[in-house]
Length: 214
Length: 290
Image (tube, rainbow over all chains, first blue to last red; front, top):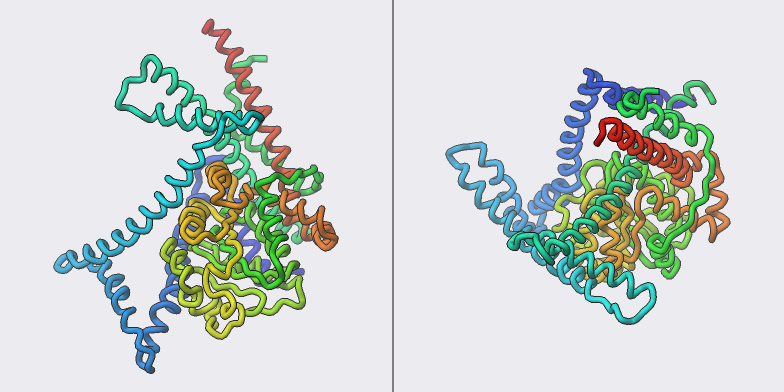
């Protein structure tokens, strides 16, 4: 026998799962209720988790300690910037929110520029500079990668009309793209089946079997 | 039989066939074989190469929607780490559920190891907002980013965080990721701080991560349920304790290996439908004289 709290949780979980799955038959109020409930709870959860796990330990608590000798005055700056973001809802001082937004965008643009160049453009470009004359199967795969990268780049180069040699190379690029879409689609099906299996496994093993004691 | 009727078969019949195909192995697992592949073996070998007392970060960057794929992965990796007495720092940078997934998983797996001590052998640091900003700040001080653990306990007095101060003291970061977060660990943390990164991701994300694996920015990629089942298989092949754990009927229900039975059957059903649909398409096309 399951504890009452657990069994209520399992029942709510199972019924909401059935509400969502009912969409497979056709759209209905049960599905829309479950969908709206999920959207609302996700937002509430996000606000709660940010407050408890980030604002409380990283801002509110250290600022509170300021009154007891730990001078964490610098934290007032990010706090002020955070509050200023919400000034956009007060028309008279809405311009102040742009200052906070500028700092926020400036920081993340800086981080992302380095991240993308240092972490993607350079290493991924370096990885396409590979030996093709060493012989063996590795050299063949290296050649496939090089042809794939080159032809796909040609396909996305739109400043020249795709005719003649350019057209033929971009055609090869389309083949590479189609194969990659096929691989992605296969993986996507695998992921979706996993989700279906997760829900079915829950319904069978956590709901139906305990209900009938099997 | 009228071919056109078959071509316009009600999609709900297809759903029903897929549902039946998925339910059969859940009710009665088949136990189809799983063969580990190099992208998964990379993480197993890395953890095997570590010494007791070395530290790893496991970041729970996923929510409930990815639970069926990533929870079995998390269970297998945590068991491997705890069994080898590797110190584990648990955290999350995905807001919707990451911390809850971590709490449930860590409590469940840690309870299997009697000698484990919280704050000494492992710690659950909880969720931190800010994404890349939090990841970058961990390079300076983990304690500054996480002054409190998931339950609000002060981390400054925890022995594990006195030993593991920043990325310099971390041997590998394992991100169990949904969406783009696994990519951040590779193109930011690996690229800028040189920490080896392994990603266990949902199958949807797996194709793009193989580019990072090939370029050496990741040491391993565990793609979806298949990756998880391969890791379970590696544990079972190498350790008696793993064979014992994964032969327990309660554990088998949660194991990725059981899920792969569902994958195999449903994939066959989908392949049959695709072949059938194409044959019907061309057959009816001929009827129209196209």
